[in-house]
Length: 210
Image (cartoon, rainbow, N blue to C red; front, side, top):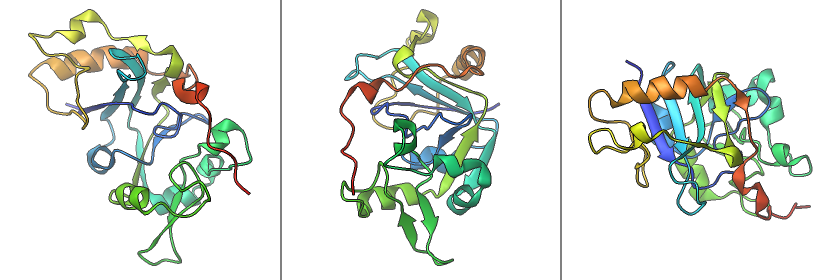
């Protein structure tokens, strides 16, 4: 039985996950999910109370491939996911930001969403992200963003259990039978790819540097 990892998407900006260029990737944040999820498992993001999207589906993806950070960085398929602060908004929020330094164990953090505004390394993000230097990838996904989908009522109360109540951490252990119901619904939603742009794109972006 595949596992379902779910969490609340606090910042819906198209960075974590990154749904662009035909592949949904989770390359930063949620290190425990990135460390433990396997091919065939599901990753699901629900809206936050702060964004007035509580009880709504932001994205769902079934993991089809995993790569190390260095594999992701070098893979010709994902060069478009490297951040470009002078590019389009999608390019600015590229998540292909980490790679090792000359074959050493030291990590380089490229200038992107998780670096400081002057382009320097944000050690807090670097340490957290690289604690699980692994990327989850999928072409079987749906990213709804600002067009988030309301979660069915029958999934909000399964013998008192609400699939959308996941707290600050992620959720993976649920009562018997809940995962089957959630997968049945999520699998029907996924496959449409990029449906809506990120909800938080309506907020001011970080100023471009240099």
